[in-house]
Image (tube, rainbow, N blue to C red; front, side):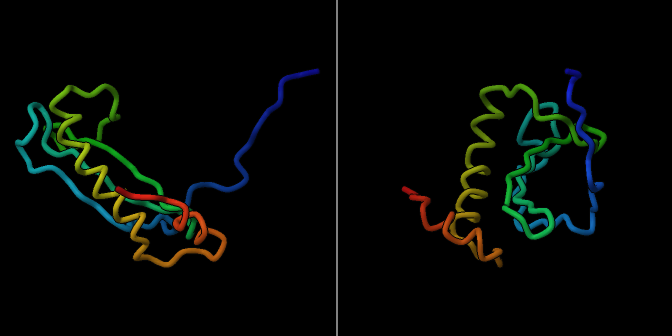
Length: 107
């Protein structure tokens, strides 16, 4: 048997991508980076997901990749804020997603 091939049924549509929450570091807080950002995004009304990225000097987004200890220390509180936002659930959810949030225990 031959290898399976997969194809995308639909292309990514930016108009369906929704930013629900965003928090960033202050410029100059980290060496060699302008800003590190954590966002809560969802696509086409789906499950909210955390997106993490950082920008270099020219404002270009970079792959997160490996983090220094200082970068980890700075991003953990940002991730916690994003997580708290998702758990709080102050955004409309599809009916099938609501039970998911009731199962999460914080603290």
